[in-house]
Image 1 (tube, one colour):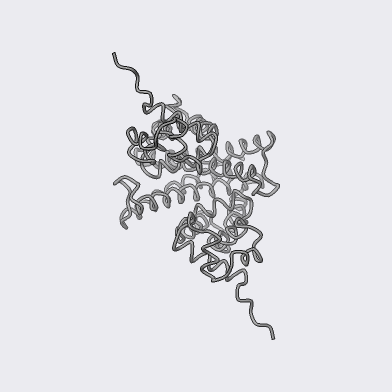
Image 2 (cartoon, rainbow over the protein chains, first blue to last red):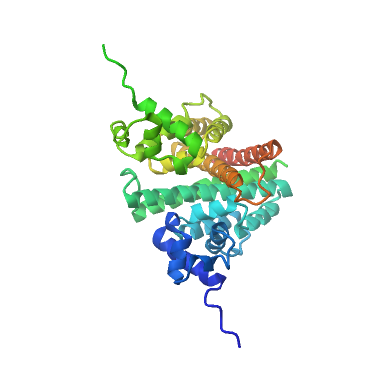
Length: 190
Length: 190
């Protein structure tokens, strides 16, 4: 009978998620994750070859599995909600995507949804990337404002109250509707 | 007769631009800017109340003045070119925008262009923000990949060769066309 490994990959990622929630991305160091697990830093490298690989696993956890939707709108909103649910979620996912280390389930769903609308394969890839860039760009901006407001660096116009958040969601939805209208327009002119 | 101040605001911003070009945003410290000018760090605070204010001035320099265009497409491409012309340009401008410390000339032009297309005032603001989020999101992604490739952190699929850059520009333009088609669609259903 095998005892479960005390620090398997999932345990390390779970510890990293706790450190992220507590310290944000700038404070997400291998040292702090090791301290959280009460192990040496070197033990982390048994599971992940480098910090980028660990951040990619954290990003995959944040981005979640498929949203099981075939509507671009719902997929995009689902992705935004997941990014917003984690401190610095947009920045960490954006970084892993840029490194080519994250396979975003939402992107594959967006490609499928764009094909359904009538786009060819190449255009569907562009449409998916455009929606992803919009969602991540918008949400990163929101989370930067939030962070700045918390540390007192932003001016007084930054909204943190529920009414402000609601306003942000409305603007996000309106912009998303424009992007998706553009995807439909691209389909109809083919 | 007054001698010109040796370290006026413009001189400080110019020094900051050189430090940015050399060290990137992570290395853009008040200490390095002061060293570049051969002054004490405290001298910088005579011109800027804090680092955010100095970064905002750098961002304004990067973002440039008006592009003098009334076409959304040209304004968006002009903004991207300016961000790409500076190391970490998208990240630094994005950060200043999030802090509410940067008045982006391109955004005002996008609002005007959207009004010309037929959007009402509120929709034109949403359209401008959507284009700005797309441009900054896309360009930030590109610059992150570039940075990762330089430090060897990205996988081999990252393109740095001209052919790859051309591919990136084509994808950017195709996505931008979708976003702008969506703005036009929003105008026509009003």
